[in-house]
Image (cartoon, rainbow, N blue to C red; front, side):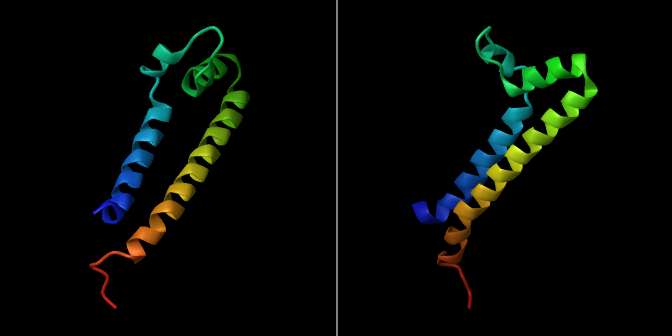
Length: 87
């Protein structure tokens, strides 16, 4: 049963990660003087300079694209070995 559930679990974890990266409210609880969360840092950059904000948003988008590609690579093999596969 676990190999069949793997693509769904990976997709759910990826979706939750993508949604949590953009969540500002819960990121404020993790923010301290020594640690900066990406959403808080992005908001701070937005108040200073829009060019830095655009560059940081591009880096954040690239990180999410790498994560989505990795999740797709992980769940790719499970879809090929399912019992409902018709040839």
